[in-house]
Amino acid sequence: EAAVTQSPRNKVTVTGGNVTLSCRQTNSHNYMYWYRQDTGHGLRLIHYSYGAGNLQIGDVPDGYKATRTTQEDFFLLLELASPSQTSLYFCASSDAWGQNTEVFFGKGTRLTVV
Amino acid sequence: AQKVTQTQTSISVVEKTTVTMDCVYETRDSSYFLFWYKQTASGEIVFLIRQDSYKKENATVGHYSLNFQKPKSSIGLIITATQIEDSAVYFCAMRGYTEGADRLTFGKGTQLIIQP
Image 1 (cartoon, rainbow over the protein chains, first blue to last red):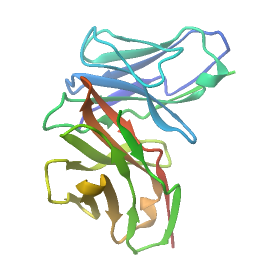
Image 2 (image 1 turned 180 degrees about the vertical axis):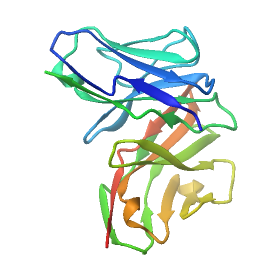
Image 3 (image 1 turned 90 degrees about the vertical axis):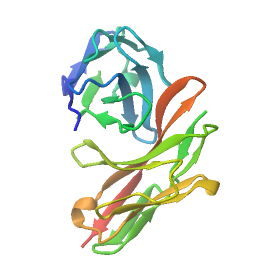
Image 4 (image 1 turned 45 degrees about the vertical axis):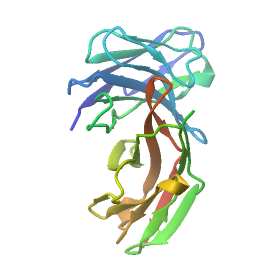
């Protein structure tokens, strides 16, 4: 099974602060995703990537940047954090479209913006 | 655009019974994949079972099975012989290739409570 590791697991920052969430996957998956989870909204896609250097915009991208530096590493950047970005963030990875289509998730990062 | 809808926000059943959770989806893709995930109390999201749109046979894994009704765009999750540890939030998801984008879309989840 794919291993997806997120860091940090918990983070508190102030409004206007700069935050970077990190994700590393060790199964050579091409695709990586960032989701946020909020009560009443389920899991919403922020950004995703098909490979190193590639970035795709998800459904709720405002206020977020992402960078895919290598096949293994995907980062989510909040440059001016706001309280509305307080959420549980999940990173995920998968193979490209085809037989192995399951998406595997990290354990989540709980971000609080005060 | 893809859309996944779970209308049941919460279900409560007695242990050892069978429960069905509903999910309907919308897509223009001719080929797609449907999944069910479980989110445990710790927050971890675990893959449970998958249905490929081109397969007529319903998928089964352990005590999880699917009721795939393609003409109705429906993919129900059936859990037989439920156990206390099945209490969790269950998400339905679809992976399609829409307008050149390969993406996974989730429903909002169904909270399952198993009572002793």
